[in-house]
Length: 407
Image (spheres, rainbow, N blue to C red):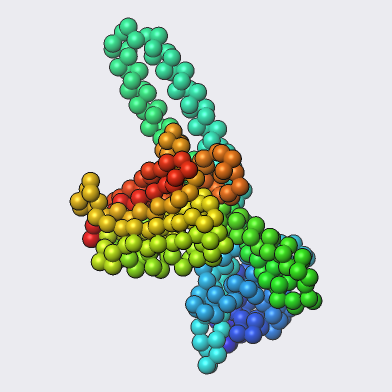
């Protein structure tokens, strides 16, 4: 590749960092913006390995995730990385990577945008929250005044108009707070995933024995660390999914879906959990049963329901996945997951679909979870034009039913 000074001067002074490295990681090109950001001279980076500018955690993430992803798919987008300056300070950036061929060899172009917005999002969220609280107090005070002056119809009408304008302002404030929360969660999810992925990379390196053989007790401890890391990652993903659903930011690709094929593809995902608890899984979905929905979203819903059934069904029990035309709504099909689990009390069956709610009993306290799976699943089902319902009996079992428009 030609030296950078032979390229467009605009690239050298672009408002984001840019570098190109070869398949072996050697830096071939670096622009002035990135050099200024990190405090290097061009000759100090060109010819050296790209990991020179990475923090320790980012090096692990590069080796185990970023480079394999870019090499396999040809690109990686919106990845949060921590760079290390020449003086040893850390700089957060969002990275986009593209692979291309040059003279028969693979090279990788990386654009790096410095993250400066996190504090701003936090401050905006705090200001919006305080504004909303103050506006709520003002609304309560004004409502009290309106009640005190309700004898005069004309004054009450004028006051009502004022309240309408105030309600519109409050709605705008609430929407601003919601947007700030969504932006904050999106930024923080990247920052939280980075150390979690680094933890996973370190665990994999230790398990491979690169740094020496491990005892059985050490392997067991590493397994606990890895399971804890995956649990935290699932929690972050659930929070981000819930935020997108609340903000209306989920897109659906509605098409005809074969429910039999869908169930057969999801069932193997829970086989290890089934085997561990010696549970029997029966699939009773007709091969010709089809529904209108988003296949990916429907897979997520079914996986959530099966995981819940496994979690709350005692060892030796059974789970049945069934499907048929709905008796009550002929234009809909019903996909059901029935277990022989602990059941749900009648007064708790509506609450299980609320975020962060779990049935609190001695039988459920040993089951880990965020209480978001059913809330997300019902919102996804409704987003596809259907619904998610439950019928349950204590100590007998539960049936969760997904209703979807028939194909």
